[in-house]
Length: 206
Image (cartoon, rainbow, N blue to C red; front, side, top):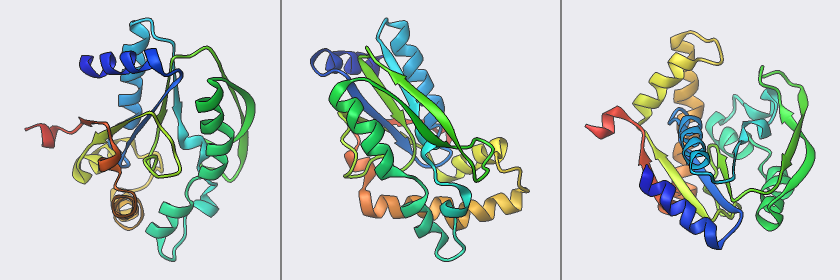
């Protein structure tokens, strides 16, 4: 990963803030990798910010649908247009932002809660989340976290934020999350957009 840190530091010398997207499938370890990159850069005295996009999820009643669940989740799970206009574009343009956003509640309730973004004087901004490598998002550098669906589900089962049985959780991933990722692959070709692919899967490293 030291080569990646060096690359980002070099690019940030000529383009600030450097907008870096970190994406992968559900359960690939995007948040973990994002934190590792953030820690590595800050330890090198790089002024850095890490943004997770889950706050821009729609409330559950809008995020999920029993009719074409995967297609619905792929197209309507995030308030991407709002996030792009209020957060990503201003940061890329001005390198700073100060506003109160409406975030999805961490407890998966229908309520939206206030979240204060106050970012300035940064060299690199890391943005982490699923479905980010689409035409609408203009990142300067893209990092794809490669992971098999098998390993991703193992991690989801350990995490189990939904508090579901293994059978119920597997059904959700098999009918919604993973098929939605396949739609993302077909429509957006995220791996082809990536500048750097980081393997985060013991099965793939063998």
